[in-house]
Length: 357
Image (cartoon, rainbow, N blue to C red; front, side, top):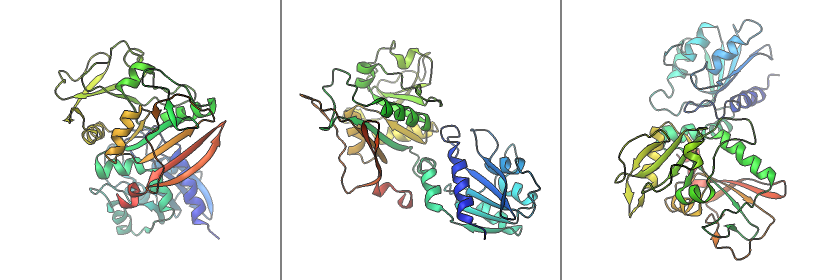
């Protein structure tokens, strides 16, 4: 008996391998099955590279004619440098296709399916839909709202503080948590900190503890006060974008970074305008690493989609930097587990779920 779910779950596993390398394209995986045997697999490996369907067909060890394709996202239908994936499936004799989710782009949504059905290919839609939508929630959010999916990451003490005060750096997390943070960095398009964090911590914001691609580094600096001798500008390891007030904007790029002008609201940068500007840069996922004032600004505007909270066993005495994130009934807890000596909680906003976008 053919187990369609197993094959689609495998396609989703393959798609996940492209995380951090394909944006602003979606992650896509494809599995070809013939006589209840996988004959070919593929996924979209990097931006500008072959699509998942093309890779699966090329990797097939027998002819794909009369096989069934399991694809995590509706095949593309627009010709570019290569044949559209819907036409590729048709020309290679694929008889049936299972598609986990429809393309969220309204310009092409449903057109790939129509193309397949027009040529006699049987199409089944919605198998493992929830898993596929969670996989590409950054892409879908970007397509539908013009903004990236925003993840706020904080590390707190056992009594709920992020640090002692605003004038010093406090390392709370265990080594395992720090490694996990670098994994998170490798999976997003960009990482953001505020001006004070950039000056006090002088961070690199790169991926060092694991193998992976460095994200674009973004710092908010309303009045362009951050010295250009900071690591963010001088190490040359990743692109750096400075979000500044449109009143302070003079030129778009220096040899150290790119400046993007943002509207001010009550003498601070508009978070909504900042996210839309980053969306125009092709950024589909954004990791906030602090400080508390920056995260508070996003919370106040209800623009955080997901939170990750690392909690140490250590207690901070005489601390003033309280964690601004409160876990309440607005959040759906995805996981809550131990990591080294710390605890890691992951939650998404209930009203920010893809089904409600």
